[in-house]
Image 1 (cartoon, rainbow, N blue to C red):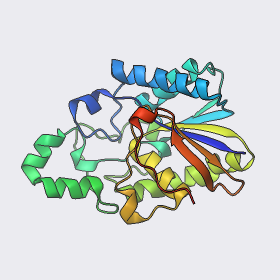
Image 2: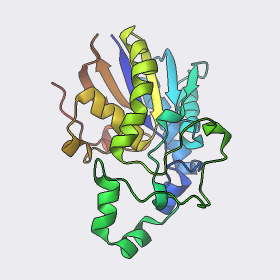
Image 3: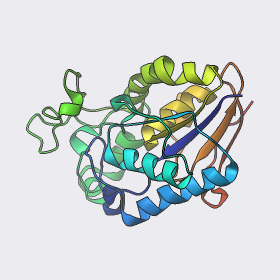
Image 4: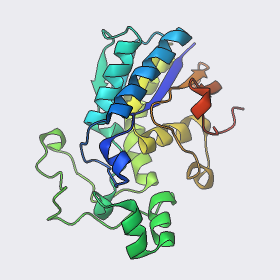
Length: 237
């Protein structure tokens, strides 16, 4: 039986500062590190053993993956880093304080940028201090200027179909340690969540989501291992 654990990175410095992060490579806070270690302890207590793990190319996800595997006693688990599992690109909102941005543009406009399925924030200016144009991790990649949840899903889909799903179909147990929006994309695919519903799905930081799947990768059961911080999940048919 294939099993999948989805793990959003622990609290990052910009989570703490209430800033739009996206592709900016900020590190975990001390609390974020503790969340990642607790996630690994919960995975170990559950008796889940991974065949391999996937993460993004961003430090907060990579370190969450490493700390969780270490705490689970599985530091030897092979890990694949893939930019397609990055957080959503927040375009021109990148680096801004969320509260100040709402005061400037209006709460409803910012809510639309953040929570709608297919309306992205404004493009990141070419001269933005947060530009990723010269980042060697994205050499040869057509870097987006902004992303909606829809275009984030479009980016994640090839990684899911080409690399992750085939291993699950072979019966492997996988960890995907990534970000709120890239993981929501996977949840949308797995649970066939509608466009209107997925905007209300939240993935808590540092809380492993364990999903048991059948041979066709249909969810049989799904639950957060830290039940005290669980969030509502789409219905398992």
